Image 1 (cartoon, each protein chain N blue to C red):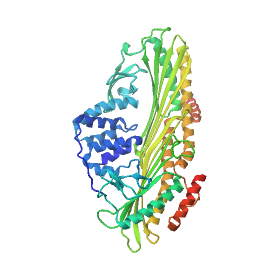
Image 2: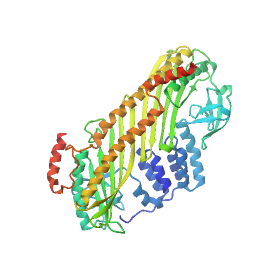
Image 3: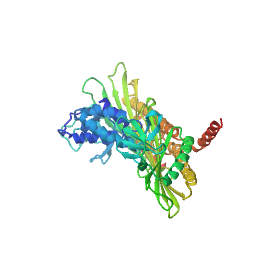
Image 4: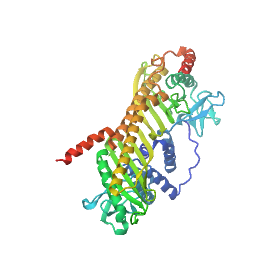
Length: 263
Length: 307
């Protein structure tokens, strides 16, 4: 498995689907673990009842069907698909409504979904908050620079049992990004990839779980957005300019070389 | 989570497993094929399939990435490219008129011998090739902290004198591998140069590819491509070389400047199209105010349209 995860960190992000299907073909006995550990860009389905779109992930999947957070029904339909308990479903409905507003305020578009479930063992519950945004010229990018611009965020929060008014929240967030610009001067320019971070907090439950989870996600997304700037742009830019000097530095180097030759 | 209802996976044939292994190897980022090979070997759990996969994948990877190998006895370095390939394991080093024997999977040069006359271009073509090579060596020492170049004749290397057309290709390869910093990258330019005698014209087509991979907190890759064309008049070898090197220098400098511009424009433009730093309200989201949400949603819709 570790070899498989190492491969996923090296293969071109734009080919992550091919990479994952290749791994599933080679290691069919590990498919459950691969599907839950390897992040993939989120796919979209439309809920037939409400006409709203929802996002697909391993956490709302049962067999080959996916559960819509709007109608709570499986697509394609299942007789006995896995469902959260009535209480948890209430929280899930509220979370979806609130998260949709959050999403609109930060993303000015996009699709969001929240899924909750009880773990097989132990107390507490788990949830995942998903967002997908297409910021390309043809999508919802208002400024029109990106030929392709995709942002997929997956936030998984495990909430422990309540103990004297506080609970432990364990957040694992992954943001997957793909940016492509294309213009005659610079040819094609594509930056893609994903970064993952974790955060663990013990918080008072007085204002409710949703409040705590929401604030953690908001803080994490802010940090990831900054990280992406440093990582995506910063590190790769550093590499490019270490490979070849920009024109102004070339003159400097020319002078250095002349000085060396004259000794 | 739910029970899996999986269909029985079919057994993969050896050939299919080999093809999957080859795919992973060929798609390795610069400087990483040996790491990928280790992973692939442990996933395959079949030495025979592994040996087949690496023997097919490594030569392709090495030539695509234009790797640079040290030759024994301090004879210098040789670039492994399709242009200098004499056969599957022998590669020409035109600068020193040598032929290197290469083990692709180990990525080492095991032996070097002088090139024979028919492996080398005619003295007429060599005038041009050699002069351009010398100019390029000078250019890359200014422009690339660690670059290697080579000039090959890929067409009509037996051209005897004026009146003949021939084609050279100049390759520049610069790689930086810092696995301890989780970062690798490469710059590869390939310049095809056609000498057209009747038109007294020399035409160039350049292809530049820059890649970078950063994998400390995930997997981030840059992949850029650029193509350009230019031409100059067919002069004597020395003059052609200076002119061609200037053209190459000009286009490559322009390209790196364009990359610089892309990098400075993108963060502001792209990030805003994907996710704002803060909502339009310029405050954090009011998570505690759940009662107000239907109102907020209508307000947001209005604000959203107003953007």
